[in-house]
Image (cartoon, rainbow, N blue to C red; front, side):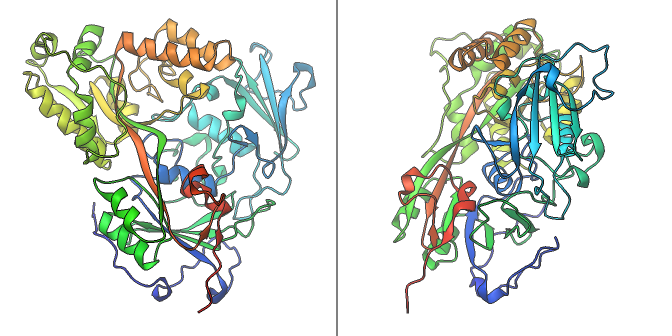
Length: 527
């Protein structure tokens, strides 16, 4: 795959105006407001529900483009008129084939009433079909994020032309408000999520938020978001065009900031980037930690790691700070996860050198993820010093989670997990695969124990408090040695001229690019 260098620095006025293909109306170019933002290149696709795609920019674009039932625990009144639990006898929709009399009665039912005006940017109404699509996709595809709450759903029923949705649960989900975020346009994908890993690779083809994706030009390194003129919400976007430009070096970012060609940066820091940004006049810089982390998941069903002692031995050999530095390519502004340093008097490993004498330890990483690739090479080189033979496998996460891990062809994989410590996240960490020897969803280790099945149920139901749930999940991982955190997410956000944001105090901004729906162009000083 081509990896072009930084795009030339040009005046945005000299660039051709992108043409929308979604049928929305546009203003004359001379009157349209525009803000340019510097971002990290998109690694894979734009599906915020896939481990392979998750990143700060993908989540930010999704929050601007896709509708959600709830945001930060609050009902999105633009999408929903009403949402709440209903008593078993108060359901309005008749049972579907998925909920027959032979099935156990649901322990919980939640009703969503969709705003009659809610529609995708191509004019298609947002309906219960979009709820069903997300539910089916997150329970039937490999490498998905936070599937536990969706796997607790036993049926989804719709009426009123799809504008009323009733969701039945076989296991109580206390934080049901965390479900059905970033709904995807089901009418543009295959039924049942058959193409879930690829349907949203190129872009997000329809929008239900304040912005829509007008174009994605990976060769030039830019994504153009246009204001969604079909957006029915009370607070439409105040900026007509958001131009997201890939920043591939500190020098490029500084030059674009200094020249005013970008007004905001939201990207991964480099060794000297924060200091360099702070030197640019009239800018403000912050570091924020995101919910993602690079981690090494050990395949508990491979012949090499079936024994917990072998997994424990490998974990004891991982120098987390070293791997973090090599993966990030820097030693400053690092978010290094908690770890147990290897004691100086630790015994030499015995299990893995002997086991890998017959066949190598196979560790995979997505070649599109530079940090994961650097991490796996560092781990392989470090293990070689202990006489452990390794083989690096380059493969994408859907293939690893869907085929190679369940089949035992991989012993471990370095991936980027999204861990926000919500109930949905904690309940999904080590939940059994959907079926024995089947695909891996969020739990790439394949660990399946009755202890976590009960724990997951207690976390979802709220029987276990959040603090206790975090401790219980951490204890299980410490005992079973399933996942090793390598590098936490840390991003630099830089505010330049040209933006009036959600708060006059930049230190109180809740995020980076994800806040763009609240931005306004700053008034220009008279010449």
